[in-house]
Image 1 (cartoon, rainbow, N blue to C red):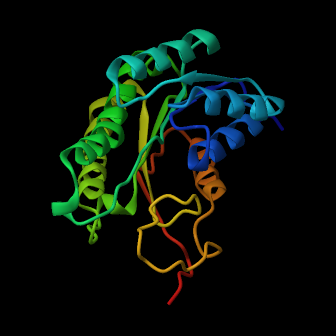
Image 2: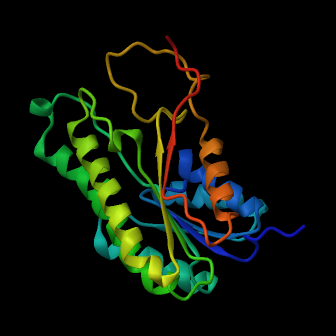
Length: 240
């Protein structure tokens, strides 16, 4: 049976590795056309080459923390694939240390990528999404968007911001036929969020990137009358 995602266009930031890569691969397997971006041109080219056997995919070098680059990526994706149906804001970074040890440049880099980049891509994609009969925005946040932790002042601030932004945007644009969900994972097996000096507890217990991709596909398959506005994900059996 043909997937309801066949022929739809999904745009994914930070799609060359980790969670973004897993989402890109899964949506390609479901028949969607996919556009990814990343800050490293070589990494984008390699990822596109590796995923081409799965379906129609394009890549674009962009740092979405820069408004002009984020907008250029969105416009390129829409032009190449004939519109945009799904936007996944996944690009992000975390620097973890006590607040007094965090430099203003490090603080700014997290706010600009995690929060501003999400806004830039949503803002650029909205005119295209309004034309879709299956419009959906997923903002990949974190459980750090509601749970402060030691060493996380900058990261917490950026993700708390993503939570507030996403919920308000959902209210702003539900009348435009756009569903909006924030995905809040805990520890994911990507190497992200490893805090220097803390003991290595292995990785088998962590959420797999593919698990997040599965959640997104399941939400896309829900009847359009229904919206799950927030999904919290955490390892079922973390180390004691």
